[in-house]
Image 1 (cartoon, helix red, strand yellow):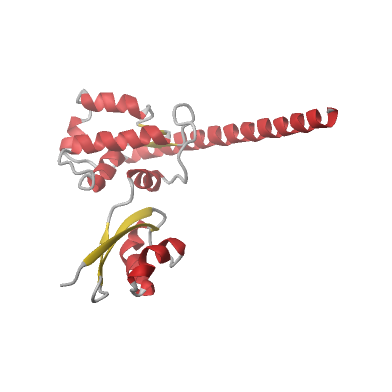
Image 2: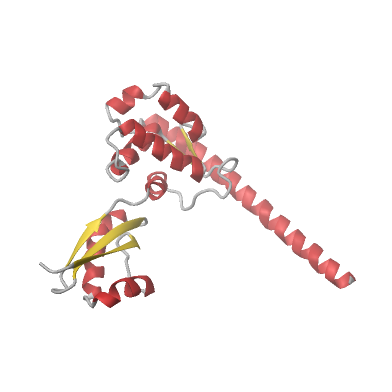
Length: 210
């Protein structure tokens, strides 16, 4: 058994490419990068649209390799779960999505092992922290307020039963709220563009006067 070296990369699920990042990381080890890419894409295809951490473990002598596929970051799983593209640039006042406690439990169960904790409730609070920094509402409240409610035992029933299925009625109501949030984000972005354009005009006017 030869000496092993581990290379860690973050790839697009099912769409890893032999670009500069992969080449600089694996090139010096002189292994078949195309083969590595092919296997990574096969093993990460279920995480399409998400960033996935991958460990490539290479035997320096034989050039054989093995892969360890991690779970995507909690933020990527949250985005995938509620179908949003990006987090908020102003998470404390501009919210980009809404998620249910059942969906939070689902993400927490997927991430629990990588958080190196056994307690599901603790994993849930970590996921809620991600929602807070992303500008994602939970049960139509700020994530930080839901953390307080979790600590107070409000969702103990759902957590103990590990409920991951969101009631249909709740999902439908959240779809309506999601559209309202998207409209507010669009309006905020439009306002920023208008303010930026106004500043550019003012700047040009000042230069002309000089």
